[in-house]
Image (cartoon, rainbow, N blue to C red; front, side, top):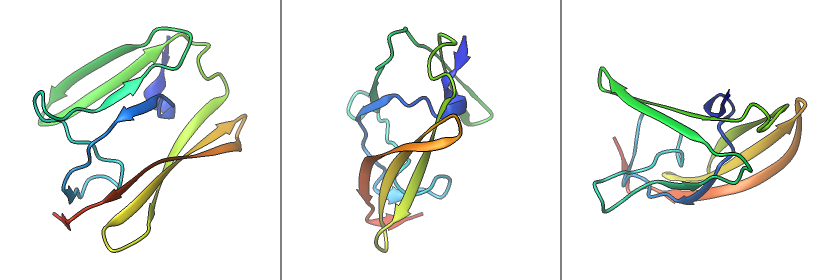
Length: 117
């Protein structure tokens, strides 16, 4: 099995709600709010293999691993890029690398916060 978190999985985000205030622990646009059954983070498995999600908490941190078949994304990895476009506004892009070379840049989201922590 291959740990997809090591290369940021490359899974498709279906729904993401940012925090109202920019959080200090992540670059702008990379946060997601999860609140009971009201707000959630949703993604879609776009691979031909099933994925396995392992999540747990320890010492007030949440740890999540996403695993799949070792053939998923062979020689491929992704990097997320947060670009500041205003005082509290950000655009996020996902860069795809194949065999170490940038092959694709994809727009992911735009976020405008009303304040920061």
